[in-house]
Length: 124
Image (cartoon, rainbow, N blue to C red; front, side, top):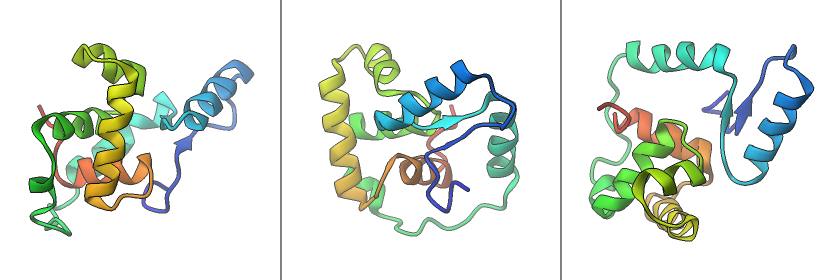
Protein backbone atom coordinates (compact mmCIF):
# COMPACT_ATOMS: atom_id res chain seq x y z
CA UNK A 1 0.00 0.00 0.00
CA UNK A 2 2.84 2.42 0.79
CA UNK A 3 4.62 1.71 -2.47
CA UNK A 4 1.35 2.41 -4.27
CA UNK A 5 1.21 5.87 -2.69
CA UNK A 6 -1.18 5.46 0.25
CA UNK A 7 -0.97 8.31 2.75
CA UNK A 8 -2.65 6.37 5.49
CA UNK A 9 -3.96 3.03 6.64
CA UNK A 10 -6.60 2.49 9.29
CA UNK A 11 -8.39 -0.68 10.29
CA UNK A 12 -12.07 -0.90 9.40
CA UNK A 13 -12.99 -1.47 13.04
CA UNK A 14 -11.46 1.85 14.15
CA UNK A 15 -13.53 4.17 16.30
CA UNK A 16 -15.04 7.22 14.62
CA UNK A 17 -12.77 9.56 16.60
CA UNK A 18 -9.66 7.73 15.40
CA UNK A 19 -10.89 7.81 11.80
CA UNK A 20 -11.49 11.56 12.08
CA UNK A 21 -8.01 12.11 13.52
CA UNK A 22 -6.43 10.02 10.75
CA UNK A 23 -8.28 11.95 8.05
CA UNK A 24 -7.18 15.27 9.58
CA UNK A 25 -3.54 14.17 9.79
CA UNK A 26 -3.49 13.01 6.17
CA UNK A 27 -5.39 16.09 4.99
CA UNK A 28 -2.69 18.28 6.55
CA UNK A 29 0.10 16.49 4.72
CA UNK A 30 0.84 13.86 7.35
CA UNK A 31 0.79 10.11 7.17
CA UNK A 32 -1.23 7.69 9.29
CA UNK A 33 -0.61 4.05 10.06
CA UNK A 34 -2.93 2.31 12.47
CA UNK A 35 -0.85 1.41 15.54
CA UNK A 36 -1.97 -2.20 15.17
CA UNK A 37 -0.06 -2.51 11.87
CA UNK A 38 2.84 -0.11 12.35
CA UNK A 39 5.07 -2.75 13.93
CA UNK A 40 4.37 -5.21 11.14
CA UNK A 41 5.09 -2.61 8.46
CA UNK A 42 8.42 -1.75 10.07
CA UNK A 43 9.27 -5.45 10.45
CA UNK A 44 8.73 -6.00 6.73
CA UNK A 45 11.18 -3.21 5.90
CA UNK A 46 13.71 -4.31 8.51
CA UNK A 47 13.59 -7.95 7.40
CA UNK A 48 13.64 -7.25 3.66
CA UNK A 49 16.94 -7.82 1.91
CA UNK A 50 18.85 -4.59 1.51
CA UNK A 51 18.18 -3.01 -1.84
CA UNK A 52 20.56 -0.74 -3.62
CA UNK A 53 19.27 2.84 -3.39
CA UNK A 54 17.66 4.03 -6.60
CA UNK A 55 19.78 7.17 -6.52
CA UNK A 56 23.03 6.61 -4.62
CA UNK A 57 23.92 10.30 -4.56
CA UNK A 58 20.42 11.59 -3.81
CA UNK A 59 21.12 12.07 -0.10
CA UNK A 60 24.15 14.21 -0.98
CA UNK A 61 21.71 16.84 -2.25
CA UNK A 62 20.22 17.30 1.23
CA UNK A 63 21.52 19.47 4.04
CA UNK A 64 22.11 17.86 7.42
CA UNK A 65 18.87 19.40 8.71
CA UNK A 66 16.90 18.12 5.72
CA UNK A 67 18.27 14.62 6.34
CA UNK A 68 17.21 14.94 9.97
CA UNK A 69 13.69 16.01 8.94
CA UNK A 70 13.49 13.17 6.41
CA UNK A 71 14.49 10.65 9.08
CA UNK A 72 11.75 11.95 11.37
CA UNK A 73 9.21 11.74 8.54
CA UNK A 74 10.35 8.14 8.05
CA UNK A 75 9.66 7.50 11.74
CA UNK A 76 6.08 8.69 11.23
CA UNK A 77 6.38 12.07 12.96
CA UNK A 78 3.90 14.82 12.06
CA UNK A 79 5.01 18.36 11.22
CA UNK A 80 4.18 19.64 14.73
CA UNK A 81 6.08 16.72 16.29
CA UNK A 82 9.11 17.40 14.07
CA UNK A 83 9.00 21.10 14.92
CA UNK A 84 8.87 20.37 18.64
CA UNK A 85 11.66 17.79 18.47
CA UNK A 86 13.97 20.10 16.50
CA UNK A 87 13.01 23.27 18.35
CA UNK A 88 11.89 25.10 15.21
CA UNK A 89 8.58 26.43 13.91
CA UNK A 90 6.20 24.45 11.75
CA UNK A 91 6.89 26.87 8.89
CA UNK A 92 10.56 25.87 8.95
CA UNK A 93 9.59 22.20 8.90
CA UNK A 94 7.30 22.75 5.90
CA UNK A 95 10.12 24.58 4.10
CA UNK A 96 12.53 21.71 4.77
CA UNK A 97 9.94 19.19 3.54
CA UNK A 98 9.36 21.17 0.35
CA UNK A 99 13.13 21.25 -0.27
CA UNK A 100 13.36 17.50 0.39
CA UNK A 101 10.53 16.76 -2.04
CA UNK A 102 12.11 18.96 -4.71
CA UNK A 103 15.68 17.72 -4.27
CA UNK A 104 14.70 14.05 -4.19
CA UNK A 105 11.88 14.38 -6.74
CA UNK A 106 9.37 12.94 -4.28
CA UNK A 107 5.65 13.31 -4.84
CA UNK A 108 4.31 13.15 -1.32
CA UNK A 109 4.89 12.17 2.30
CA UNK A 110 4.36 8.42 1.78
CA UNK A 111 7.07 8.53 -0.92
CA UNK A 112 9.35 10.30 1.58
CA UNK A 113 8.63 7.62 4.20
CA UNK A 114 9.52 4.88 1.72
CA UNK A 115 12.68 6.74 0.68
CA UNK A 116 13.74 7.15 4.32
CA UNK A 117 13.10 3.46 5.04
CA UNK A 118 14.85 2.31 1.86
CA UNK A 119 17.90 4.42 2.74
CA UNK A 120 17.85 3.29 6.38
CA UNK A 121 17.47 6.84 7.70
CA UNK A 122 15.05 5.71 10.40
CA UNK A 123 17.63 3.62 12.23
CA UNK A 124 19.17 5.17 15.32
